[in-house]
Length: 382
Image (cartoon, rainbow, N blue to C red):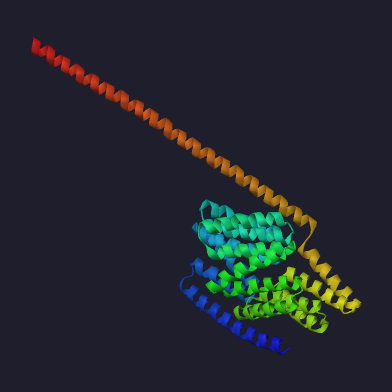
């Protein structure tokens, strides 16, 4: 309980700092009302505070104005964040559509970094749908591009996400290697939110390996860092992870305390996936403790949350949407290649015609000069 009280105090202080940052950005925006970069930063600041509705408003404002101003960079950034917001709410079809919009624009701009980020995020969608082969495929494409542009952090992100796939398919040793590779980069670059994420992921693997003390150690580190950064999504996820861990260890009372905290934060930020996972953790903990009545009630809550997060029709939509997008993308690529070939052919034909014209003109000039020389010779003879 003392541990939770200290974290709540830290959370309050971090919230005050986040508010100060938002106020500072708003003051700056009053001086530069058309600055899309500032609006994007305001959206990110709202996101950091867990104000997802406000963040969505700012990102949509950036998108609308970026279209008017033909600002591809900020358009792509905002589209990616809107996609993430929908993904966190379990609305994967909407998320994928925004990612595809971002991908099309990024490809037109030949922005490899943005393309890699979109691939990575699409991969995360497929993990939530348990389509692990598709997820790995997108992560690999993202990691390849990240390597080409020498973006160590993006490579680490892909490693981290691959670790999630290995974890899901129970290849725990591979998962630990991937997570620790990512953690090493995040630590070297001092990226606190991502350090927290990697620590949390490592903790989950240790739990599956029944190494509970290591899991608890990594979870507590992750929680302290997520509170420090004010990352409510990671806070709620980590509270659930710790609650689930205590349930595994047979400490039902402590498990419910942590899970209740996870639920409060997850509902506040409308993180349906975490709500679903937390009810599942509570149901398992109650069943293990012999509290079958509450186990049933928690499982019912889990089922309700699960039906909001995943349904067969949405999975079908997701698959159809991606197939349609990839088909259109390939058609555009073929058309572009055909256009390039036609353009090269036109240049070739033009060069040949020009060469013929030069040859004809040259021939006529030479012939004309020869004719004049002949005339002069005849004049001299006469």
